[in-house]
Length: 96
Image 1 (cartoon, rainbow, N blue to C red):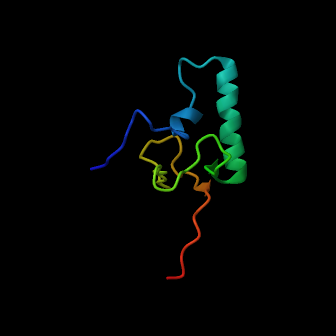
Image 2: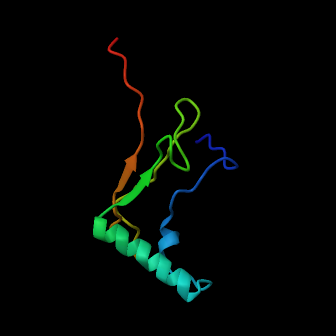
């Protein structure tokens, strides 16, 4: 069970965003291919959610959920998924 507010949720990235679909024109196909190449060259997906980013994490108000399974499904175009590197500002912990 999850408490997710779909109306206020933001999708950062989805594997379908890297796959070619029948509706894609050549420009979109090339953009998707470039995103996939960049991720595979870096060997990771990157996302940042700091205070000056488009979608910052706000302590006590926002949650970042990442479904980051490393192994793909049988027959999946990507049998092994790249890890995510997430840049986030975390509050300093109290020594108490």
